[in-house]
Image (cartoon, rainbow over all chains, first blue to last red; front, side, top):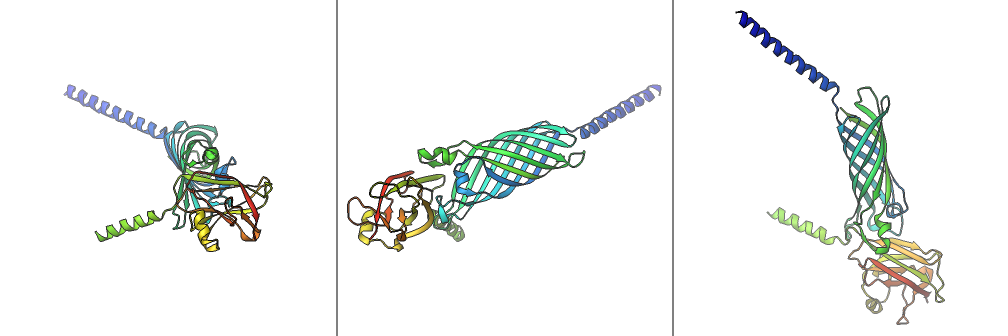
Length: 210
Length: 139
């Protein structure tokens, strides 16, 4: 009986002990969960930073930006980004009335480093690759015309979280895109003018995460 | 089955109509000069698409406005008389056009006939550099 009582006590104790360890570790993990998933919805302004094809041919307008980040909270991770703008031809030397409207969209994949700066303010530095397309919608007679540009991108993003839990924040960021490809076939003298473009996207909106 | 065939036909029809080539930009450029080879500044010159393909056809049919389709691509020559256009490589027949009310025609080298239009005979080439184009007063 004595042995039985001791056995039951040991089993119960070990069971309850392991339960409490498990419980503690779960609680701990929930509070300090370092894994972050964050999405952002932002209004966006497109600006050309040089005097090449995109800046001369099109007038640029506002658009929107969608972003998703996966990584270790306030440290490092990878992200995906999508930008879209409606352009219009702005120079009579380019393409003409056969192409009344143009849509620019750009996908980007980036690695980021985040650093808390002050209370709920976080800064993020990123580097990545982008692939963009300018789709010029043409008349039925000509059909649509697509241009692809790709290259590297770098950017800085600031997030001001609205509470200490850091679930929702206001985000402001700037990305600079360096188009390095030679995907657009053109006269040798115009290769750099047509293909090498530098442009920036300024994004302002909200981010939501865990 | 009929619907599938109809869809395929429609798709082929739509793609068959596509005249431009993706991811290509041709450049058309040159310098407008007078008979003394002085550059002509502030001259409006247009890129148009044309129903005719060659200078011979132009000679046979003569020029009238119905042979060109305005595509709203134009430039104003700078102080060196230079102009430049950017257009996708396409199956359109392209031509350069000087508006009639500017009172000038392209000088023809071979013949006395002069026209306000210059047919671009290799209009799908990536780099069309006409260098000096002599303009003379139209009659």
